Amino acid sequence: MRPPLLTWCCSLLFPVLAASCSNNDDSAPPATIAGALIGPEGGSVAVTSGPLAGASITIPAGALTATVEVSFFEDQVSLAPGIKDVGPPLRIEPEGLELLLPALLTLPFDPALVPPTVTTEDYLVRYRLVDGRVFEALPRQVDPSLGRATLDVLQFATFWVSVPDEIETRAYLPLGGGDTYEYDSGLRLTVAETRTEPNFLGIPLTKLTFTTPFLFFSGLYLVDDAEGALSLFGQFDVGTENRQERLDGAVQLLGAVEDVGAQHDLFYTFTGFVPFGGSPAYLGAAHATVSIVQRTSIATLAGNFEDVVLLELAIERGDNRPRSSQFTLRFWLANGVGPVQVQEDQLPPHRLVRAVVGGVTIP
Image (cartoon, rainbow, N blue to C red):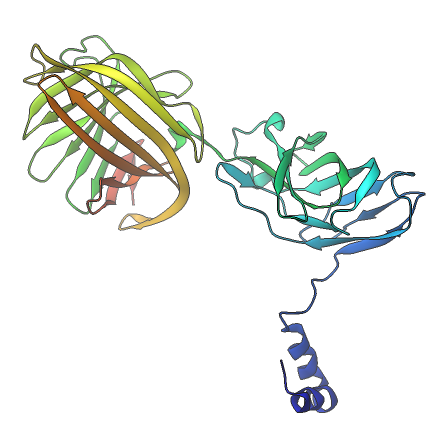
């Protein structure tokens, strides 16, 4: 708090400075965006400019028993995993006031923030009550082109528009035949389309091969469908071991569209071949957890990537040799590029130096 003398000097001798001092007072109440006195006859409040432009509420006759000063304020969202907030939060006061009849609330949102996979049925209005609890409601109507959602409300609270935080899998994991990725550790990732792998003859596969500076090879066999879903069908190692494994049935790792924050548990059995492409040598079973952990950004020698999701693949496995192991692979996937950073367990991550994706060299 300012000393009285300083306040007196600011206000009398330097009125401009006094106004500046007042505006920096963190204890000042938030500014009302819009408001009106509304009584039993009903009425409305609307915002015509600023971040909340387009927000409005129409209260019908009979919803209130007395005249109330209805006020709009800007507020903050309550974050939730798997949810993308696409509209500014509107707080309506007096918070907690209950209506006898539903009012029609219109909320603005930014269509540019909505993922392309979202449909009008996916939209949510999230709202926070005065006690801090957060709930979800389905809007009555959504206009994606105008960026407006409407719903009926019976209580004043803080409201905003949200959608599922979805990605198109193949946008972040293109996996085109001939794509290559080189990392600062010397690790190299290549993508090949093949039908000639031993023990998979005739099956169209996407083969991911990781090559270390010591010329050890390891990787995954994937199959995809026309919609873009990816399934695991096997893995291989050539180096300290010389083995190839084929799942008894391909298991889907990622759907064509995935929610950020989603996690899938997979259980599968497999047959091991030693050496690579040889005869059946052992049987095993595994549990895999696949997670789209979060959105993030990554700085690499190939550039800074802002639109990135973290994919985590954790596998626990055992076989009848007997052997067991567990490991975690993490892939930081940039939109339109693919894995710009890779990490195994807690080892130092491999950061992208250069890549060729769809015939385009990066950087």
